[in-house]
Amino acid sequence: MEKEFTDRELDRIIEMAWEDRTTFDAIRFQFGISEQETIEIMRREMKPSSFRMWRKRVQGRATKHAKLRTDGVDRFKCSRQKQITGNKISKR
Image (cartoon, rainbow, N blue to C red; front, side):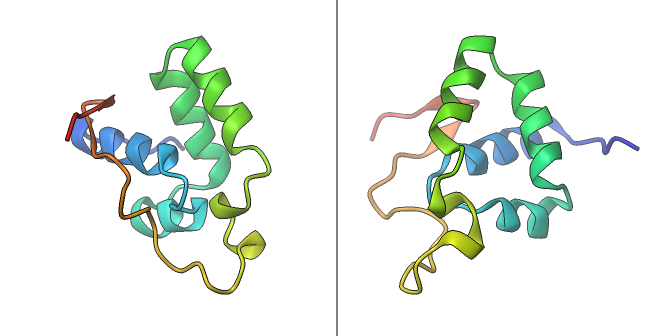
């Protein structure tokens, strides 16, 4: 059964998926969806080239998987990371 999300929730899921320090576990905790469901949302909501770029970047990335992280990493996103709104990166 596919969950229904508002546009705002979808934007937040996409934003969290793009953030290097936000784990798939954090997305599961906040929205109740698995890593695979997150990937399916990203595939559905993004342009094919953007999806391929994202998948290549996050596949095997230690910071996207809580079990692969080093002990000192406990934040969801970098303090220097730009805010993403409406699926576009905002200028500071």
